[in-house]
Each structure stands twice: as structure tokens, then as C-alpha cells.
Image (cartoon, rainbow, N blue to C red; front, side, top):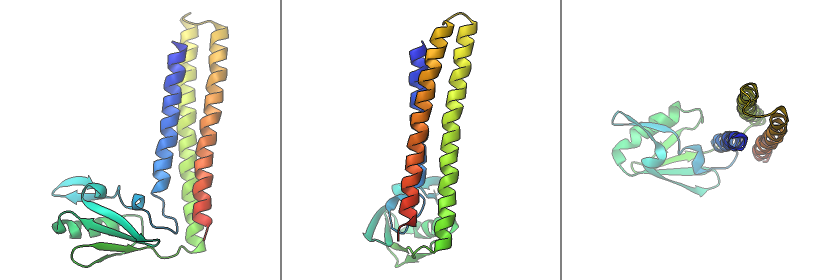
Length: 185
């Protein structure tokens, strides 16, 4: 029973790190990547749809993203969604393809993006600590109900603390990696 709790905690902590990594992929660096735009939501005939489902996204050059919609009628909706997103990019449309040119990042914008990365990493650390708090509460309840002994609870708490430290370190490493990526020229 305690092992199940710890396995569930590890799974939830792993998921928090995965969400962080996915989130960090969408933060713009100096290079173009399809991950920047693939999750942008487009209003497709009244249904919110991710761009990846409506178009082929390619990166022909390091600072350019091409978006080729499967249905050319969606170009205006895609352009609107890109303009209203937080990317700060202006789409260029030739009738069948949308091109996004990524300008070089200014030092000020890089610092701003680093602050965003720090905020997202902190959110992941909070999520991991919340998992720890929930499991600690469950362990104490199990001890109060005489389902486990005090020694078992302490051993489980030690394992849980090690898990927490491991996943917080993974979140920190993901943030440091993204920060270096943003700051390189």
C-alpha cells in the first residue's frame, strides 16, 4: 500500500517535469522550431483546434517557420491566431503558405524570457512539493488508522523526500538548459 502511494507520487512528479519540458519548448529562443506554433489554437469552423492538426509545419531556415494549411480557407484564421498569440510574430501569407520570420532576440527580450523560464520552473517545483504534501498527509492518516507503523511511515517519508529532491533537480536542469539556449547568440 505504501509502495503504491510512492509509485503514484513518482508518476505525478514525473508528469510535472514532463509538463514543464513541454511548456519550455514553446518559449521562443533565437532558433525556429515547430514546437513554437504547433499548439496555437485556431478557431476552425467554431471548434478550437491545434495548428498541428490543420497544417504542415516546417523549418526551412534557422529563423523561419513555414505553415502550409491542409485547407487554404483556414489561412486567415491561422494568421489571426498567430497575431493574437504571445509570440510577437507577424505572419506573411503568399496565398498557400504562411511564413514566420523570427527576428534576432534583443538582450532585453532574452532577460524577459529567462524570467518566464524561472517562473515556469518554480510552478513545476510547487507542483512537485504539492504531490509530496498530499502523500505525507496520506501517510499520516494511514498511521493514525493503524494501517502502517511509525517506522514504516518514516521510511516512506525518507523515500518520498528523495523522490522530491530528484524531481526538483530534474525541473531545475530543464530550466537551466532552456536558459542557456535563450542566452546563446
